[in-house]
Length: 507
View (cartoon, rainbow, N blue to C red):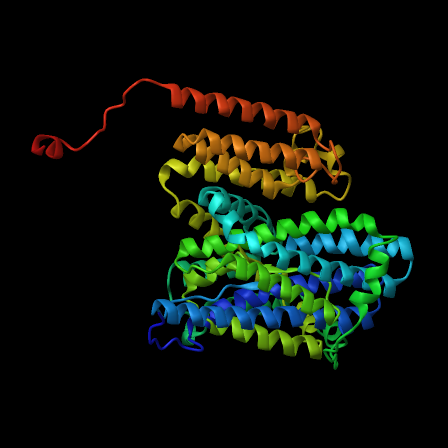
């Protein structure tokens, strides 16, 4: 039953959350534009099709998640509900750039056709996510919160907080000043001059410092403004034109699309669970379906990147945001995409001024992973974080990762491959051991054996018998857990119930 509640369309706290979300999406849009232009794709495709198409996905998803927040607020009679943050998934974006778009161009040597194939891949990925969303809540109930949040914290501490901290220190006189402004304003709760939102104040100060001290030059403004123009958002048949090639000459790309879509669904599930721990419970199946529909709609307008619920949701919740930041993000990104402002802003604002805000977002999630679990589950949270350290190391080298890190450990690359699956399984198994639920631990070990055998984990590509040593190891572990369960069941030791002294004397 819905309760009467005055849930505001916009409030002051939405401003800070908007800048955090906008910068996250802006960074991805900038990376997309720079990478595709560097690969030789013409500006007509990049700014005329890909960026507007991606913006459609961002607009649709943000508006719908604002609507979901309103429904949750009315259902629970609360005004402190925060809408889920939404945008292009950064890890999936890189996979589609270099695992789909680049191979498509290498085979066809045609930029137009390569783009069409990648758009078709995005449409197919969204469709798979919508179909798979039916089981979203069931999967969520089977996986312990410590495993889900621990895996997510691994992403946050490496690819978000860690990576962005490196960017912060790349220009210390800009990044460190900006970082301290964020910490003082958001964590220390100190108001900025003239009550300017913390994120906006930090960006302005960081950008002014960068230009004043010569880290940014006027030529970068001219470069950005040269891409400003009118880029209308128009539908395209590219997804359907590329589907034929995708299921014939490029059918091998399905081995990339399927696992990365599964990963994207789990990423959404993790982030929804993180928000549930923070106090706002959303239906994970609906969120996965929304992400899939958003991806498909984006591809209909030329976008080629799957979307997801962001881990920034928790940071926005801690900022006290509602639904207004999500609505504002949709409106601003729509305008920025059709006018080319994205390119201009990316040239003017230095990454060192943006990165500290994302450092805070990443650290918020790491803290939430521990705060949302009992102390006894801390080892599970910590263990679930570790595979992403391996994944970060293996994905941040320009040369072959296996050769680069072999001198450190032969286990880095296989641990990093399929890090999301490995993190969740290791975390879940640890939780079940702590709780003495050895049958559950055995079941998850069997799942790990299957994922290893087919290449979802510990292997560079999908194939039968892809990581046989790991599959055997997980099978042996499952047998051991079955033995432990048998010993627990057959134990004849009567463990006395421990009750407070007052209760025992009363009875």
